Image (cartoon, rainbow, N blue to C red; front, side, top):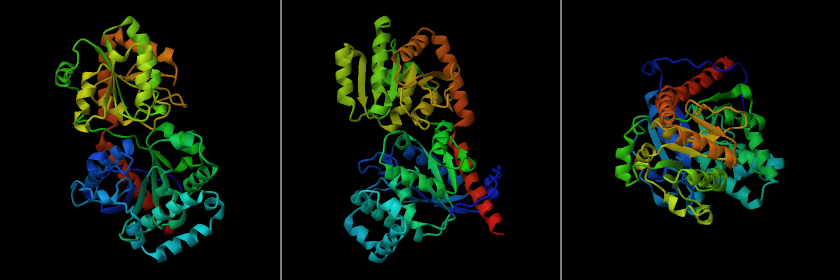
Length: 440
């Protein structure tokens, strides 16, 4: 399926002078748009939420298949204008049967042509993939599109590409590498590698993600790094005192903030241990954890064992509209995760003028956090390093303010949704032009 040739050249034309193009997209929508069905969508959903309006501004009509939304919920998607359509994936058995027995049989036949891939997978998993492929196939056949854009290469919807074999050029945005880095069944790795070979183009949200998908078989000549974005108009540098007043937080505390799912790979336990060391010397410090997840009870028990339960606030999930206030209220944002593509929370905190402490990616550099300029980097799981970084910031308030200002400037220059939307549309057009050139 992949075409060959030189890297497409991305230019910056006036969007008003460009022809309209149509993109079929598959990915999650955020909770406030009706996302759910056991998966909130996370950073990928936030990416899509920020991207769609900007694609419209660049003469791209997008039809999104929301793959984390249960049809039974019948969500009312927001009206994003005439150039954005959203529909929910069909999940119920009755709706699946409506897709047609003939389609199921045809797709099953395609499966059998690749027995090395499909016979290795568990039967129940294969049946689920077949049902998703029927949804996928029906979605693509019901519209006229120029490009197929799939978010998350390892999602089951992309694995269904194995048996759908669309004629459209396929762009895949790789948002994270958690599945690639964690132990997984051999059959799943086999499928992901096969689809990496078949994609026409990749968008990686960071250089860390780029390096990891290359190690998994993606062609480095067919990857463009387009970072995640942030809404700089919502996430602004407001008054810390005013924000604390609204949230009923102590005005004099040094507040350390974390936001994310409370799951093992986020490293929140390491943060709690480092905070215990910090508060021994700085009793006015406070740790606020926004989010929830399966690790919550275990983490709460850890704070009890360390004797700091009164100094750690498990605030739970927070409405998205309130998030800027929490960033404005804190002194430093910490993301101690084992692996992140490019954390949306990091960009949001930086946009609110806050320095960030996060973990050093394997390749040694971070797309947003520049040590000593926009934040600090530490080794994952290294309690001593994280404690030292926190102590450095709590002892140098002027340094904290300077890094926060630099962080905001960096976001304005490199991480706006306007920029991300324009670059993504450029990839679409360059790929179509490349295909047209090769067909002449």
